[in-house]
Length: 134
Image (cartoon, rainbow, N blue to C red):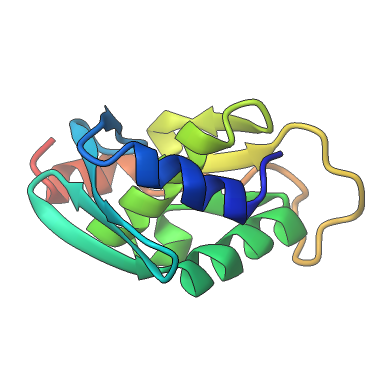
């Protein structure tokens, strides 16, 4: 896994680059990156993040071993941050695109929040795609 500092450095050099979205069809573009914040364009909608928010979200994924778009609210900003992690941390994550789900490939400990049935969570992907016109 790469560090958040490495992600900052890489995104500063990737301004204008596009990458595929997780869970939604389309592309995401990095439109700004500095020491304090990151800006993405997700299917024409701007999503601005502080690096603190990105760090907290990454720590949540590492602690729980999974992260879904729905868990983050299901909006364009959630899709943007999950897609960014899928791009930047590709070696450390499995991506279940149809469910908007990221899963750590090699967790080192027990997840903080476990699901009752101990199966990977699924989302309401068919409804989400219907809502967003996909």
